[in-house]
Image (tube, rainbow, N blue to C red; front, side):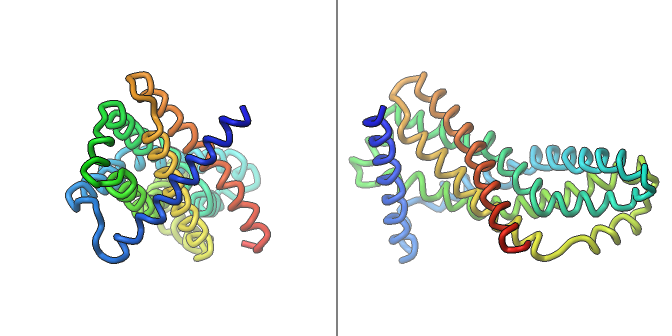
Length: 255
């Protein structure tokens, strides 16, 4: 068991080191991956993920508003449902829920694609042609998720607020002006800065976990399924653990 742990740690260090080295040609303006491939990955991380991101975050905002309304109306403070949804979404829920969705959708797709290429020996063929897998396959996926996850976080905040407003208007008869006035009064730039920083870290974590699991998959059909499962589990658990770290850090800094 100890030997296996050391071997896994060694592979992870080699993977991270190769990714850092791959940044060199990119920073010099000579990336090894094709712009067409990067555009496809970018679209998969953004436009193609808008539907599920919208649905999940609208429902999360509505659930937050419903749970808050049930309690707050007992004290005649139903208007503060807007504060609850705005703060919870911008600080925590929009970033975490979006990351979980991307881990189950985009991260799984990345892992399955790379694992299939590994099983078909396509990655070996790229290496023979002088195209390292990390430069050609991993780097564009990491960059795409790091760029797109924060933008999806901002979009998720908006959809969560709309979900909360739907419940506030339906249950509490709140007017749009009253609800959004309370929302903008409750929001603070530090909340968005915290959520934006979280989404950057979450995007990098999901991409790294997915690509690592895909590249280290067994060369058979079962290996593809196993790599996909490990990528999703690693991504979701990593996001929750990293969010806990952010929460402790934010508390220490008084945010």
